[in-house]
Amino acid sequence: MSRFDPHSWCDDAQPAQCHLDLELEVDFEARVLRGRAVIKLKVPSSGALDLDGRGLVIDSMTTDDGRAIPWSVAETEDVRGDRLHLDLPTGTKAIVVEYATGADAVALGWLDPPQTAGGVHPFLFSQCQPIHARTMVPCQDTPRHRVTYTAAITVPSPLRAVMSAADAGSGDTGDGRTIWRFDMPQAIPTYLLALAVGNLAKSDLGPRSCVYAEPETLEKAAWEFAEVEHMIASAEKLFGPYEWDRFDMLVMPPAFPYGGMENPRLTFLTPTLIAGDRSQVNVVAHELAHSWTGNLVTNATMEDFWLNEGFTVYAERRILEEIYGTEYADIQGVIRRNALQVNLDAFGPGHKYTHLRTKLEGVNPDDMYSLVPYEKGAQFVILIEKAVGLERFDAFLLDYIKTFHFQSITTDEFLAFMEDRLPGVYEQIDGPSWVDGPDMPANEHPIASARVDRIRDLAAGWAEGARPEAAVTETWSPEEWQLYLQDLPRKLSTEDCSWLDETFGLTARGNYEVLVEWLTIAAGSAFDPALPRVREVLTDVGRMKYLKPLYSALMSNEATPPFAREIFAEVQESYHPLSRGSVAGLLKV
Ligand code: BES
Ligand code: ZN
Image 1 (cartoon, rainbow, N blue to C red):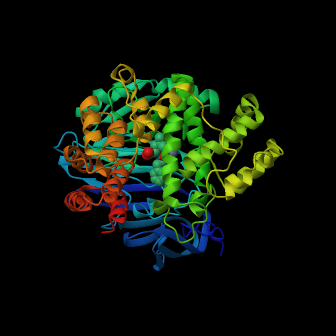
Image 2 (image 1 turned 180 degrees about the horizontal axis):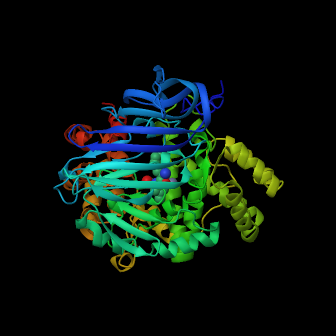
Image 3 (image 1 turned 60 degrees about the vertical axis):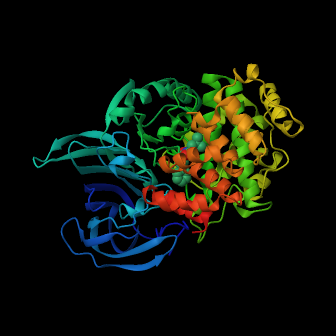
């Protein structure tokens, strides 16, 4: 037996899958997907095969030529889920599974019409990263192996299905349903399987990109993300050709638990990015950058997640720098470094989850999600860049992607490649402290910017009475506001909160980054006039980046935990299972 991924039952001594054919009907009433998955094997095989599943309701398993496959749920673990153990008859080329998804499929977010922009139709979306594809499709659910796929998704008309795949046409069934067909010719890890169904319209943005959204949000979305073609061009300069044909985007309803998800050919985005000023397109740059780092070169397991996110944050900054200039990229860097510090402080010094390479046997990756792989990872990449110089580093990046494209690699495989191409550098930059040591090593490269320093000094003087002047703040960008608010004390007096809010109209802001930064202070300070807005955000938005700090702030003040629990009790049913779980942990309910 040779199990290499702590989050999968996949056994390398057994046959490997190479392609999936999915035929699924979306049942909004029962909240299940029902149909069949055909799992093709690389070579005709026989004997033992373990697949991942979680809560799937399986009717039958047969070979593609109709022979019954003996199978059982051999084991169930909290983190890995169900071990579907199959005994393949001689010469099995493909496994046909007739099944339905379970009641608690973590990958699936089922939304009622009131949770959408239009308010009339229901909505469904999947989120398979890190280990939830197995709640949607039986498969070897490890990023170490890749699959191509086709799909035929039947939905009630007039809804539209979209996937992380090429559009292969649609047809009416004649009884009020539409079948949407897809073909994914590029091989992907299963965490990049993605499906969404809703009342969707689309607007073209460029020769290889469009945005899908509900008709009510489409126009605003198209404006907000109109610069995407520039981003693709600038990323291609850095990383080499874009290999996924199209980069389309889907604007989700607000319950989507993340800011963005890099599903290939179709990035999923939270509607909270639509600020009307293009101030949050860094998330688009980030998801686009995953087209190289993550989707082409993929982490072998979640223990190597920093390879996906650290390189992507680095790449995101390079794209932003090219399009919006160094000052914008720097301020984003400082904001995110601050956010990392909040995570590091929460873990406490020396914590094992502050290593870049982690050991996750028995650990659910959703429970230890933090900015460590992102920002510490990016800082490590910056150190490599500084050590060898930009020109040599850019050549190294291109080489890295070309060497490993459409492969999944471990941290060790990356380090061996680095030693081969940039000998001695790992040692020189004290690589081992970064990769296998805790916290931020002392040789971190500081981001220096006069603009950033002025804002930080102003915030640092708050206790001594320093206050921003209207003439100065008038020119502040949303990022500058965010940075200023991040640096203010977490608890302020009622008078101070009132002054800030009355002078700068913070509770009325439409930019969620600024708004939530402010509301976090206001909630932590039990500032009554802002609490209705806190409730509104916690009710409307499911993005965990906003839920976690707001609920934590409410829990940190002795006056507000009952308020936090009351809101959660009221709205938890509308949260995605991931958001619900993470907030329940914070509230200890
Ligand atoms: N791939 C991640 C989202 C993710 C990570 C989902 C792990 C599930 C498990 C995505 O690329 C991401 O990092 N999104 C960020 C935005 C980014 C600008 C840091 C987010 O959602 O906030
Ligand atoms: Zn990412």
